[in-house]
Image 1: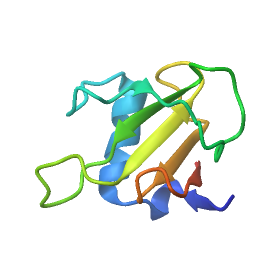
Image 2 (image 1 turned 30 degrees about the vertical axis):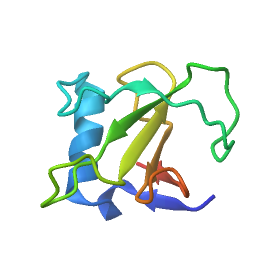
Image 3 (image 1 turned 60 degrees about the vertical axis):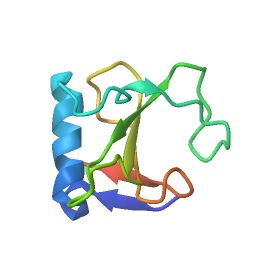
Image 4 (image 1 turned 90 degrees about the vertical axis):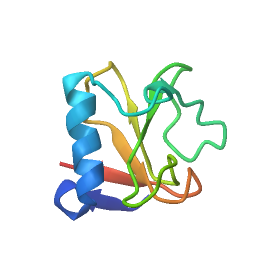
Length: 95
């Protein structure tokens, strides 16, 4: 899996990481929901490990395709992945 540096992410993704670390508030009610990793594109972990968060898309009134998925305890951003195609591909976020 490829990686992307935090500095290379869109500004909206950096803001989403900040919100995750702060524990919210998040712009969408679906933020923080369980991500099942059913396609096993991310490393295997027990159910409940991963949670998904929306990355806003400029000009869109909907949630769009971009997400950040983080694993581990809430407010942790050390095991996070970015997708801009609604979970088809992921890049590990490197701090």
